[in-house]
Length: 136
Image 1 (spheres, one colour):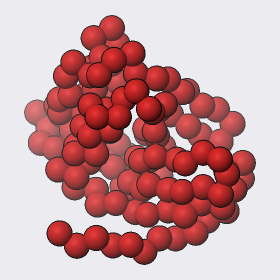
Image 2: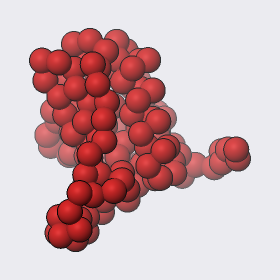
Image 3: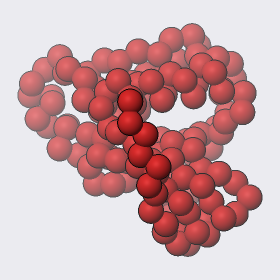
Image 4: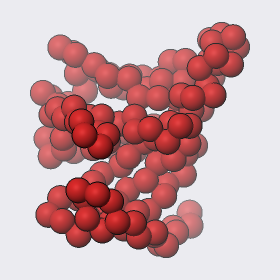
């Protein structure tokens, strides 16, 4: 396995200077990141949808009872509630559904970052419109 240590630097309003490492967007890598973060590190993370001007931030109540993929969406199920993350390139049950949804739901960028501020953003998943899907 080759590890790419190059990063890009961006100045983001409200977040300061970020060093960003882009990650592969293949299904195995993305499912591996989600599985590792939520099964091994669930006590230490906050996550949710974050866009400039609004944030939905939650903490996991426990380790997930199930992590599964169906129709290109990963479901992380905590028992009392669950969430879905976007298309990670899996097989879809219906070609028509894939055509209708994949053009905007497909994962187009995943990155990890380091901030000049006190917090460190975790993995960030963005769809084809580069809108955030899940951020931890």
